[in-house]
Image (cartoon, rainbow, N blue to C red):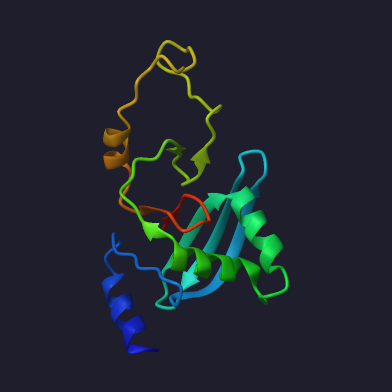
Length: 153
């Protein structure tokens, strides 16, 4: 085990700690594709033993895959590594709502409110307040040409 990985494994004993870069992705463990919701979730293990997931737009992955189909043995791992290389963690407020499983809810998945009517566009959500109440186990990324996404653990 590298010294860096050993140090990160000690830090990761705290549940709130997570570190990911293009060199810390050991392997992908599962892939979930939701074509209707246009999302792909790639589960991975880090080199220091902590599991994580990357969730991005499926259409962005497909575009990337078309240009990289023959370049990598494991396209999903290569995508996660390239995503973490090009995208940067952002504090920008997101317009999507994240459900309890860490999935992006599409804009037409509006939950019922207490009067059992659909929540509609007349409601003004304080997205900054919503963002601050999200679990610390979600980090948002963007600006890398592969679209907005998030890493969760």
